[in-house]
Image (cartoon, rainbow, N blue to C red; front, side, top):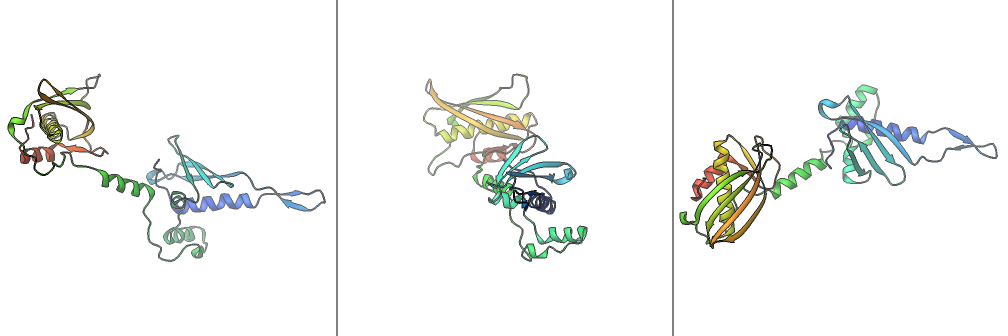
Amino acid sequence: MARPARQTWMRGALLLGALSLAACADKTQGGDGSERPRAKPAEVTALLPGGGADVERLSRARISTKSGEILILEPDGSVTTMSLDSPEGRDAFMVTQADLDALNANLDLDLSALVAPDMPRRQTAQERALEEFAARSQPALPVLRPGIEISEDDFIAARVDNLNAEGGKDLVEVTANLREGVDADIGFAYATCALAGWADRNGIAYGRHIRTLSATRNGKLLVGSAFTLSGDRPLGLRVMETKETLRECEARGIPAA
């Protein structure tokens, strides 16, 4: 699960403080009268500030002293789990030179030896995940295989049906009828173009593909594609942007019914 961005120098300071308090626990009296340190606690806790404008809100973190696992209770009630020695764990408590400088200015401390000078900023786990997701994204219309030709006789009819039981226009299915033998990618492209035309007439900017089914019936290729619709660009591996898709459909010669 992606964790919210946090103030890294405050995280580092609070974590170091929590671990220091655990290490400096009260001593106990041994049987021979000598003082012995208490046994290491199974876990320690720390309060971590939220990210962005929510810095004043604190989340509770629990760190296992045996396994090194970190459990962070987020403000929304969800729990973020990571290993202290994992890339995500090190990322969560990373302290840069700029962070230490800010801490020095506030607490009059010299912590420069804790981090290498001019350490470059590392990409966060959330940024890496979004980058990998974007690399898997596909265009709204499929790339046709070489040699496939499009004819206006391929397209028979298409309609858009609302699947939202409450009457909203955020979930629809496009049913497209094509000539038998037409390539499946052309069938999906026809359904997407039909949706783009319908969405444009209804003032809807984006559609996200959910699933597509196809079958041959009565000598025709029948394609059924479901989409969610929204005014803002959604996350998805295949997203239809209405205006851009309409231009692509026209360029390919695919009708937008």
